[in-house]
Length: 163
Image (cartoon, helix red, strand yellow):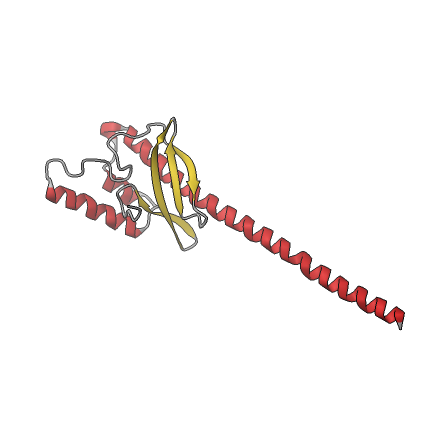
């Protein structure tokens, strides 16, 4: 009887040990997936903003903000519509000047060397950037996942829900 108790105890211990060892692996894989997901959101945010800075740096050869965003595939349709409405409303209210600042960068001047990551929230959809060489210049983007891809849904004055 003692032998059967020992075998039963060993068997139970083995089952418990095996079931416990799977949970940490699942947690690690989930954390890795979240990290990859956050990295993708950050990559899109940086790609979008830094490509826009490159456009702005072209001065007189730069595309107008509405045209540039219309051609960009890294923004939601909601972002595109909000930008168009913002620009049209500004032109309607002040035909000579329109917006007094760039709607994406929310400024007249900007870091010409682009932006880098400052921080992001735990969900990965709010990303805070700072200017390269100008860390006091901040920009917050809200990202949205659509069809498995991260897209910019808010940046600067456009679709801004942060203020």
